[in-house]
Amino acid sequence: MKSLFRVTATAALLAGTAFTPALAQGYHLFSGPTGYQAGDIMTHLSVIGVIPEDIDSHITQVPGARLGISAGVSPELDASYFVTPNLSFQLIAATSRHTITAKGGGLGGATLGSAWVLPPTLTAQWHFPQFGVVRPYVGVGITVAFFYGISPSAQLLGTSDKLGLRTAVGPSFDVGFDIPVQGNWSINVDVKQMILPTAARLNHGAITAMTGLDPTVVGFGVGYKF
Image 1 (cartoon, rainbow, N blue to C red):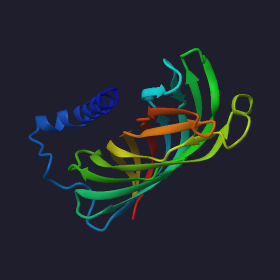
Image 2 (cartoon, helix red, strand yellow; image 1 turned 90 degrees about the vertical axis):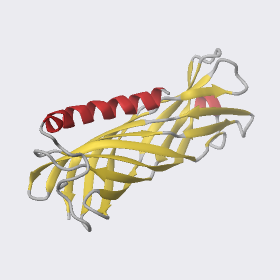
Image 3 (cartoon, one colour; image 1 turned 90 degrees about the horizontal axis):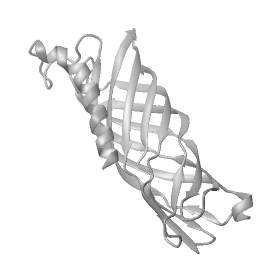
Image 4 (cartoon, helix red, strand yellow; image 1 turned 30 degrees about the horizontal axis):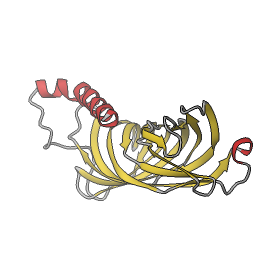
């Protein structure tokens, strides 16, 4: 619920800021030029902040304990293909590193290890008509999060084969806007909310844990339209 509230509030804030002046002038959300044409390709290079929420996290064998996942920062590259002036499909590529901790249940803030996550995301985006220089959009898609480079805490786990993370699959929601600055270049602001339940295993499965990563991903970058 907290994840859905956050993305809804973010979307409402961006949409309200963007559309209030336009609505006052009789602006139509589904008609008018978007600044794009069918066949256009838009790419973005962004810096993103990945903020996991650890929803409904628990460690099965340790009552009161839960997993904690640190936030991460990484570059992101995406590409969108416009099927129509309003509809595009976007694929993103990014990877970020996160620290995994165990909290509560007498475990304190013990560090279990760290892992890299690769979450390719395919999103269908609807681009609203441009007003002024702002080109807003919303989207919905699917994310598959692969974990790799898993490094357990040597002090706690000892060997590298005692920590595992299950691949996570879930929906994602997207809201953002582009602002053209010169020629085909633009500035992009984007917020994604991903719903990603996953499981962790410790000591070859002797201890298991579940968590809803549900990361909020905030990005700022530059774009180029081909």
